[in-house]
Image 1 (tube, rainbow, N blue to C red):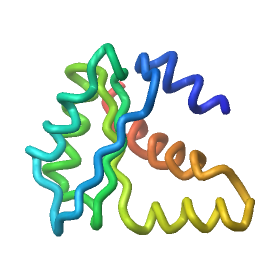
Image 2: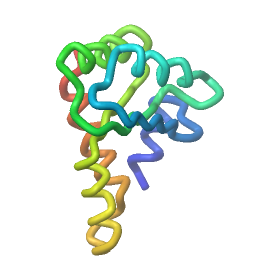
Image 3: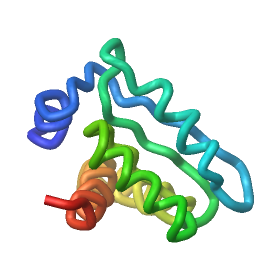
Image 4: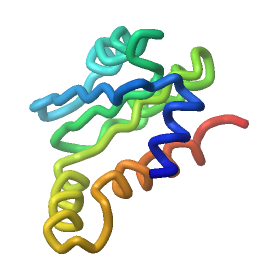
Amino acid sequence: MEFLKDIHQDYGARQIVFELKNVATVEREHINQLNRYLTDQFGRFGVMLTRHAPSAAVFRNTIDLWAGQRRCIVIMTDSDVETMVRVYETKQRFPTEVVKAQYIEFVRKCPS
């Protein structure tokens, strides 16, 4: 799994921290809460699972964290989780490929 090796190398992620939020809208404080877990002990890569896509302002907060602290928070929705289940059940791909796709989308929006 090359993606997991890259996450380990680039973010010092010895494990991937997941935060699940069963809320109508993700707020900046939710992002900051996950950010507090992204330490040297766990690494600087986390995934937030939530019901709906974040607002532009909340997404901007994740970009700012990456730019300022090189911490990566990928936000995934119910739809992404459904895709992960589908690819797992049909054995088309590994579910981590869905996380990787969201990560690539995130990185493309980050400043160089």
